[in-house]
Length: 102
Image (cartoon, rainbow, N blue to C red; front, top):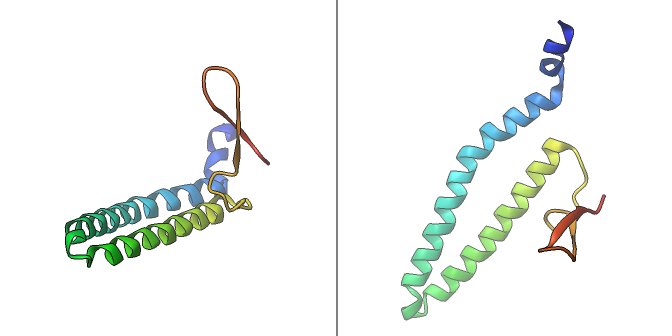
């Protein structure tokens, strides 16, 4: 019977639940900000005011992706390679496959 309750005593379970509960509203916020910035910048591109808006939106999207990566690293408690997934491409077969670099 202890095998049934063992996963509930693991702190990693509660970190993952907290990450998922935090990630949903954060993901909606990030999506709205990026899509609104891209749409607003594209609409204003004809007036040349849109180019700085598009640039600022892309920089904000890069900052948000860095924040998401750091949040995921904090939850899973592993060191990030800084390149995103920490994977390298392996050629061959029908398409690219991915192998972990760690």
